[in-house]
Amino acid sequence: MNTVSQEDILCFIRSAPRFHLPDDSSSPLIMIGAGSGIAPFRSFWHEREAIYENQKKDSSKKTLGPMYLFFGCRQSKLDDIYKSETAPLVKKGVITKVLQPYPENQACRKNTYNTDSRRNRRWC
Image (cartoon, rainbow, N blue to C red; front, side, top):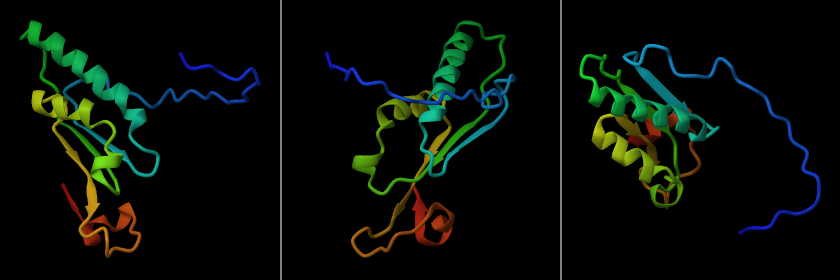
């Protein structure tokens, strides 16, 4: 087990009551991790997976709406840390598609930003 220092750690916890899934699970959902990363969206795809599993048991319920995840990475092998979670959900149909822009030629590219992605990057 890891040990934690005995020093006090100051932090600020803030709620985000407007950051939640829509009440209607058939509503489409677009998740964009632009700079902040995609960790805040993990609860969304976990909740949608639970809804999906419940709907498999009761076919009278509505189907899930499409769910798209957009986020930028520099190197897919290093930066795509949630691939082991998202790939099976794409296969199941919980997440419709994960779209990530990668530099076309990382060795020759200068830094580009997500806002430049249509010109300088391709969506995978």
